[in-house]
Length: 267
Length: 367
Image 1: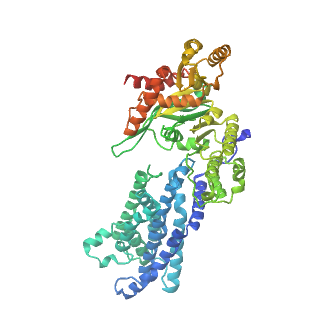
Image 2: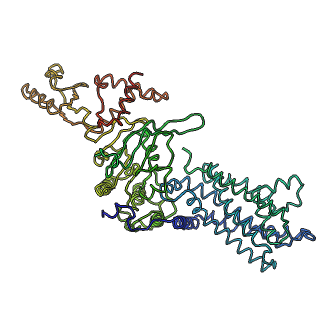
């Protein structure tokens, strides 16, 4: 053994937060590529959902709503990506890494907790973003959807969602004891979001009380902001409301992770 | 070795760890105090459930202690993670590698997260895993996984190395080569905290060691010190027509106690040479053949078993379960046989930090 190995890092590189997160994300991407079931669900479900939705939207009477088929489909599709490519698959990832003691092992090293969670989330987030991009281009070509009128709302909504949904996935994973259990644990929020966040059923068609409850769901403000950003029809009041709800969910989700996330299997 | 306070790389004071919630808390670590000097290899021994891993995890900074204080390289390892982690290497008791990654991918990832990491190939070569680079972790044997874990723990050339049962699951050869590597690291100045349930491992590697029992330190010192407090043994078979009463008076031979089982006699002594010499001189004069003669110096194993037995017999923590009660009863019977059992006292290093064990025993006896 050479003497240089005794004195830590004398003249050798200290790791950086970005470098560590990138290394972990790269490993996670490799793993995702080898977990075919998770990969298939993450990639194909969000791409297939819009086709199912299309026929429903075609039958809607959109006159006077200021909406087009494209401006209904696109935010919904982004919602599907968040639910399936990001949330649902990350619940599995976090649970699997915890049960394999990977999270515990990573915590013995230099990675900070937030780097571990972010590194694990990056590949899924990237897939989700790529899907959004592909779908936007596809809608532009097939449905002639234009550029967003207020792109800052789209960006803001997406950004908040990409913090909130991985965090919600981490919390959800903490309420399960196994990888299989994690998928079950992910179902309620996925279903509630599909039904109540305006992806399948426009909130305007719901009874008032129901609608105002649904506005408080975590996915709703994201859909509202993206749709409003595209159409430019969102009032200042509604924009503020959606932004507030979105930020609130980000804060709640991050707090919940700090409070309840489990790094090790139950003893 | 440990006289200079500033040279203590690991300082543990009255450490406590409690598991639970749900109204049924379990105190796994119950006031553990010790320190490890720079360049020292300190071994934590103990039966399963003695609190070894629970203790080590607190020192690694994986969890905050329920009570007491930990310092590693002068820092709180839990609160001041960023200052401590780049300077330590950790080998957990169980791997914790994604099973679908290859050995090389795992090492590359860990290297990118480790300050001053050596090249991954070199690290794998060092533990004899270079030829398994492209194999998925799930296809490795238990021993190979341990070696991969070791390779990652020493990847950054840590100042302090934590090894939690590093040779469990290894074959004899693998164990030897791991010992060789650990010895090299120690000789190069790495401070090592090792847990093991292989007594030989501690005997071979450790400068100092502590025996943990039910969350407390039952004995602490150099292997020689811990062993020295234990009696040596002489056992043999008396031929027909001879009885223990025919032997010279045992106390004069330095014999502390004896056991007979049929014709087999087993003597416990603090003065092995004197006892053995007197016995052999007597046999020579009486023209007696002592069959199955076995002369055995005190061993760490003896010390270890004695501590486990004594602690149970003295009810240090009281029987907790029906199972525990049975074990205690059995051990009490054994201890009664050995009349001197209560007189055995582990010699400590004279450091008043080591009073924990003696205190525990006193408390147990008065209870």
